[in-house]
Image 1: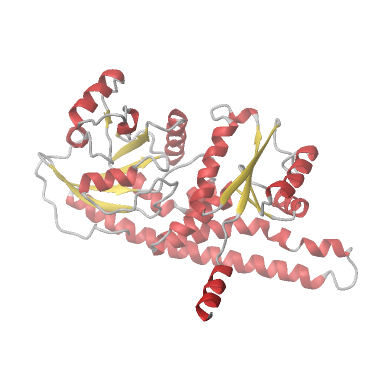
Image 2: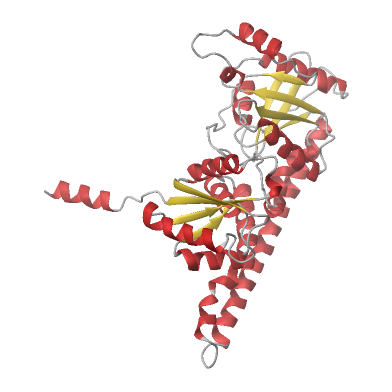
Length: 402
């Protein structure tokens, strides 16, 4: 009996996944992505965060409504859906203003978050190093600060007068000061991290070791490629932002020497500038790299649009003109899976069907296909940039997350 009671007690406290409804406004600005594709990606983010998607709602508008994001009729429809779907979380595909978030929570009676908050939640879940955790916390504080006023909106409904003027207002200002102080402290700590990284990079430059940075859309297979090339053990999952912290490994290329290969955080659509700014220490690895390898998931439905997103972010970072090699990944998933394929046969077929540019290689990181040509192209690019074969390399610790 005791065992049964204990088991029942354990089952009673199991936390059930949140039931989320996804909401988006279809505007003329979404020309490159259909609204359904955008919500498909949002659903993947929700899955990574650990919630369950129970429904979707979209509305065609020239722009989201200023105060409620949705039009009144569509908002009423969303309220009615709560009875049918039993959702307890609503996630909007665009960043909400503080007033929009507050009014929506009042109308819906459930927690309301936007795409930015969802991404930050995933980042917090996957940040394991001190640097990653500092960057996530900074981005969260910067996100929360303008939304604090909404937390005190209950005072407005009291109608003013005695008892409503001083305490609430001073508490709000106190909270703002606390968060601003926290932001300054986090920025100072990240400045120390940046100084440390700058010293580390200077040592690398003095030793003449070329640095190659893997860039690409999230879930394109960057970590899988790093694992395949240098036999590393970086976490690689079929989820968005499965890895967050930058990882550097040393690889050896015959006829050239040692190269440092760095895996960085993946990019995604609608990545707010605040997040990019908060992650400047991590993204500096891309700025300081000698060569970028753009890893592309050729099986993605919106592969071209994903490439455009990556190129835009690289352009915003001022590194669009850096020497580049493109790796078209996951080619094994383009083949007929009813038969077994060997590497040479698969590569010959795919090259014939899909001719690629000179600075592009076809690979399958999962199958380890195309890695010989990848290494060869990497060597040719680096030698062409002035890195001489057989340069001296000193031992140093590059093996872990930094």
